[in-house]
Image 1 (tube, rainbow, N blue to C red):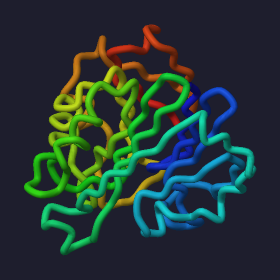
Image 2: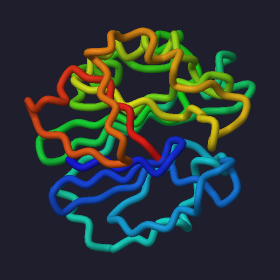
Image 3: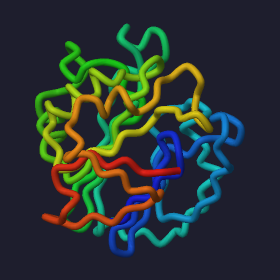
Length: 213
């Protein structure tokens, strides 16, 4: 599975002949980031905010083989007030080629928030090959809750998203440093590139993977 970070919460994921773009951001919605212009078999949008819903930036191939992948979407709250501040957001579970990837969207509260997630859906979140999880806080869960959430679902790999650096990102949210502070250096893999390829049982297993935009 190839995972390419396009900045913020936007990723292009390729598994075999299937490709998908998650949460493309509209031009100018995220300071310092360029324009999304991708081609893929599918696009997944966690919620209808401008920094996540720019479907116009993805040209669909129309060739997706529905037997090659499956999606499952889980509705969550975009804030800690049961959606009264920012509405809802979706977690998306992608299974393709024997691998499971979970994009957590703009999750804004703990997974055990009463009445939010069914027991069946909660079980589906466990043991993914990789999760893409927001860590910057303010609009989403913060670094501490992100680390707690990741521990609860026990993925094989973690890729943080929805944070800022000195050059790009929403000014209200935090950098990735607070999230990484929850892990030992040996468990953090700084790739230095926007893309990584992962395979079952490879050296990325057990790592927090920090991609570069």
